[in-house]
Image 1 (cartoon, rainbow, N blue to C red):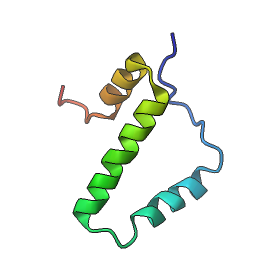
Image 2 (cartoon, rainbow, N blue to C red):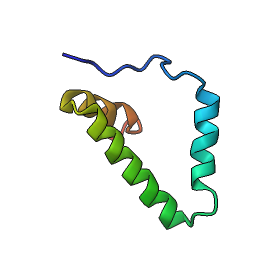
Image 3 (cartoon, rainbow, N blue to C red):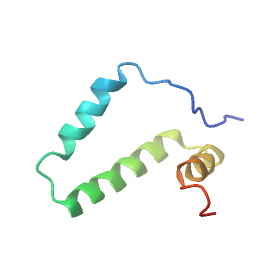
Image 4 (cartoon, rainbow, N blue to C red):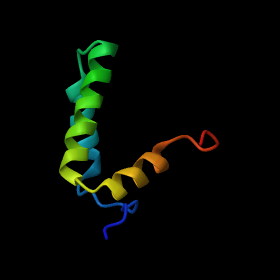
Length: 66
């Protein structure tokens, strides 16, 4: 069963970060939030493993909030 990989795994991470920021350029705050939501759902669908996604949700939630 796959587990959430939290180790660096993205080739050229700086370039991806730049592309992500560029994709948000000229969007309103509402449009930016909507784009993030769509991106999360696309990537979650690509991952496709509910256990991994549950681990990711838990890891991303601020500590002390449950």
